[in-house]
Amino acid sequence: MSKVRGVFEGVAGAYPRSLYRAMGFGDADFERPLIGIANSWSEVNPGHYHLRQLAEWVKEGVRQAGGMPVEFNTVAPCDGIAQGRGMHYILPTRDAIAASVELMAGANRFEGLVMLGTCDKIIPGMLMAAARVDLPTVLVTGGPMMPAQHEGRTIVLSDVKEARGRYKAGHISQETFREIECLACGGPGACAFMGTANTMACVTETLGLTLPGCATLPAIHPDRAEMCRASGRQVVALVREGQTARQMLTWPSLENAVRVCLALGGSTNAALHLPAVAHCADLELTPDDFDRLSRVTPLIAKFKPATQYTVVDLDHAGGIPTVLKVLAPLLDGTVPSVDGRSIGQIAADALEPDGDVVHMLDAPLAPEGGIAVLKGSLAPRGAVVKQSAVHPDMLCHVGPARVFESEDEVRDSLMSRNVQRGDVLVIRNEGPAGGPGMRELSIPAAMLVGMGLGDSVAMVTDGRYSGATRGPCIGHVTPEAYAGGPLAAVQEGDLIEIDIPNRRLDVHLPDETIRDRLASRRRREPAVTTGFLATYSRLVGPADRGAVMM
Image 1 (cartoon, rainbow, N blue to C red):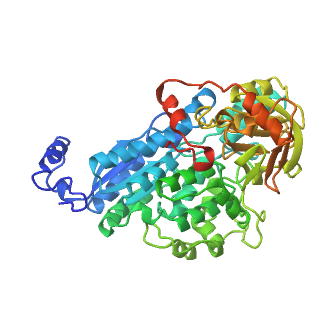
Image 2 (image 1 turned 30 degrees about the horizontal axis):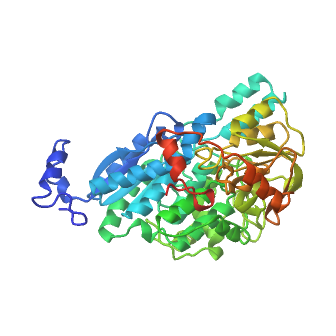
Image 3 (image 1 turned 90 degrees about the vertical axis):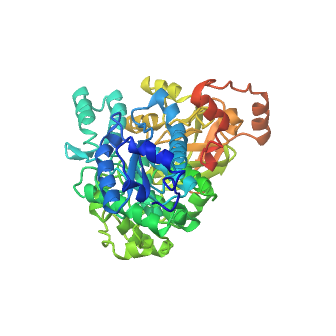
């Protein structure tokens, strides 16, 4: 019988044995390691639509290695579908996913875990759970969907967001708009740009918690079947070796993961998720660590919407193993991986970079990584920007504030074209507690680009953005307005100064004016008073600490 947790052992094991017998399990099964398969499959979004089949392949692999697989589900929403009011729920689901996996693993006394996820909050939620339960764990990420072509250009979902702005501005016809809509998603998998889903898949592989090549292998690739079976076999091997998730989730592996994110121009949401994962592993990772590493980690690749390359192109160029090979001088190569090799060994065995999709370390696209952390009178504890996606003319900018109390207000303003070149759009009360849920403002940001304003109008918010966002879009402003941060003191017409090279975000007001305005403001009432969101609002921590429910 299983010796690690002993759920089926002896007289005490009769109770669970009896219950499992009702589902068709027998004596031979009770001698095998009990492996939980956490699946985020659903029919509500393409990222998870194919995971039912992937789970079957995983279970085949577990059985091949002598394990006993049992599958359960987690919630799995889609950021794209939730845009607008539904976005309040998206970040909170990350903590719900982490809790659900933790609860199922603890209650059922699994000896190992395989977790299947694809989209933005699902992978980080599963990583948080892996850190908490500290079992032998392998993640299987669902892979990117296939991109399409339209008039000689590669089309992915982010093109739909920008097309909204182009259509509103009269730059494209209704027919063209519809063509882009119909082509943007080419089947199951994660949207093919370097958004949060693919960023976190790449991060997970760098952490050593997936088999090499898993992050970028297309969702529909025939090699997916064996990747899943091999993952199932490997988790049983990890159980027998006693190798648990926290042996991969260490400070060196987190630094490696941050560097890979920065080198690929990954999503700013990683600056929320990796600190949250670190917190669950009893480690501390902050946005300041992102900025410290960004200054000394060159940008070696850029993807849609900044270029025409997609994550599928990255796979063809060698995937994360090749990225590790390029960055090897900057990484801790001793970090282990679930496949039994170290990160350094995986890098040594990888393909050479092509110098096109993946650039050499001595010929990077930029000397610094994709993310910068700004501080100043408007963001005492920091704000985050994807500097690799900012037009050079907007790296430094001073402009009048246009103040909006929600994403909904700024969307309406953009739809009515009530924005001037040079403006700084300040969107507040979208933070973790104030929103609640720290909504993603990717559609307003993309509309600005589509309207031809991405090189002249900035956005500043205590909310967040998509990994596909480009332009001078600064998020995660901390403290948030709801908590009394300086963003709450900004008034229409105040001058906002952005200086990304010098890492500054300031409002041109004396400190005493900011203090007086904050002291005299009327505290905003909670946006939600019942249900999960109300609980989340009361318990969630600040963005600079990962927005984790405490």
